[in-house]
Length: 65
Image (tube, rainbow, N blue to C red; front, side, top):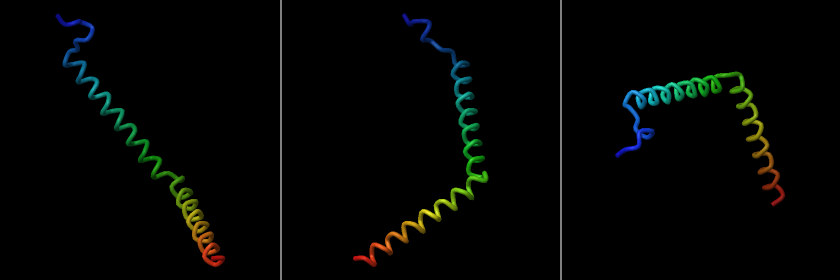
């Protein structure tokens, strides 16, 4: 005989699926807001500065070699 506390009804499973879908939608909206925010420009500037620094260091190493 099955233990009653482990038996779940189909309605409970549907609610769980809807809750999980809603949670994923909220996370997707948050990620979209992060990508479109003002930090996108700041992130691009920092990445360019890092790339310039790496190229500068590589050139300096090649000159010394």
